[in-house]
Amino acid sequence: MAGQISKSDQIKQFKEFLRTYNEFTETMTCSDHCLQKHLKTAHRISMRCICHIWQNISTVPAADLSGKTPH
Image (spheres, rainbow, N blue to C red):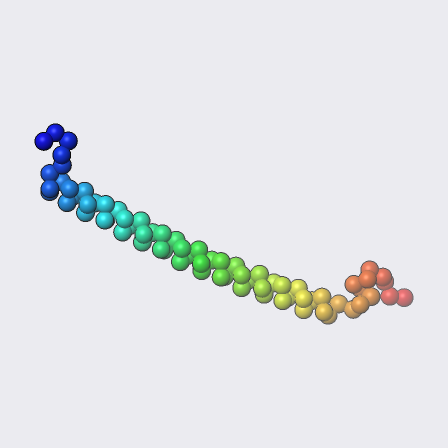
């Protein structure tokens, strides 16, 4: 019986595999969730910055945008 694993050792190995697999998938799920939250937050912040920039541009007189100074 050289090289064969007993039934109880096979069960222990399978349980260890399942435990490790569960820990891994929980970690990946958490990481994915955190990444999605971060990306959504970054997107909202960038959209607000863009809106703020456009609001500031729309309040600048046309002469200031052309680079000419009023007389």
